[in-house]
Image 1 (cartoon, helix red, strand yellow):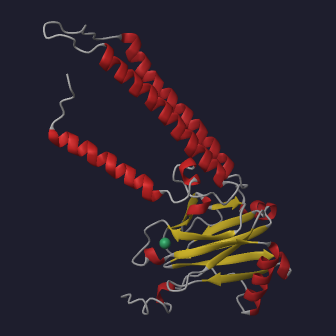
Image 2 (cartoon, protein in one colour):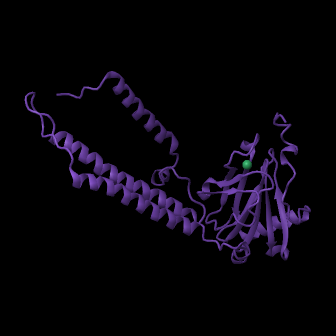
Image 3 (cartoon, helix red, strand yellow):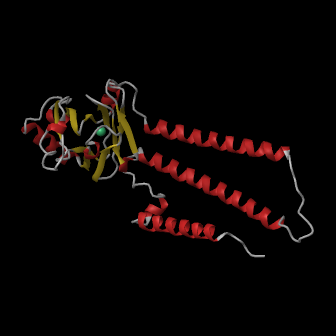
Length: 291
Ligand SMILES: [Cu+2]
């Protein structure tokens, strides 16, 4: 006896398989992306905990899937109807099995929850008190997210004898956050207007920038490879939300210090916490933006 699926269902199944394969083939550009299960290549020490959680969760899900599919196909084949006159044994109300399939998913959720909280604790390892976090880290940065760009304040820079410098951007001119490889940076998020979200995909991390939550939304991270990474706002914050792009440049200490001195020479000194609508700055007009 063959498998009698309606034509429509067969078409749908074929389409789904073709679509999924296309997604996998086009989505994975480098071979390690397969091992990372489509996660970006982590670029901070903390990001590896997210990758571990992601891979572990998929492994658990796949093993569970193999077990469940195996049992389904086993039951389908072993207990299939073998003749027109005789139907297989019909079983109802099996209490042990019902208890098992209630408890097993609860156990799985508990295990997932445990590993999620564990990863979260390892990622958000900064002291709750911002001053303590800044003292512990090698460098501290106050990131200002506002409509519609970012300003990066490097506070208490050693190379400048403890001075503070900043670099701001506009919607046309993306700012760059400079960090030093293998050096802890304490990042505090500040917003003078609405909620934004600081997101660097390569950090496998994002955190909301909430007005009024001063010195609360902060974290410490340690970049572990050099390079330039994309960053963006991940919270719909207004008309030009999509232009809240920035770059993160992870470099060595000498280049970082030289850049700090450049900022100082340009007169970008002191703490710039924004408040002005950066959307009014040059750039929007040249992009054909409407106010
Ligand atoms: Cu935003």
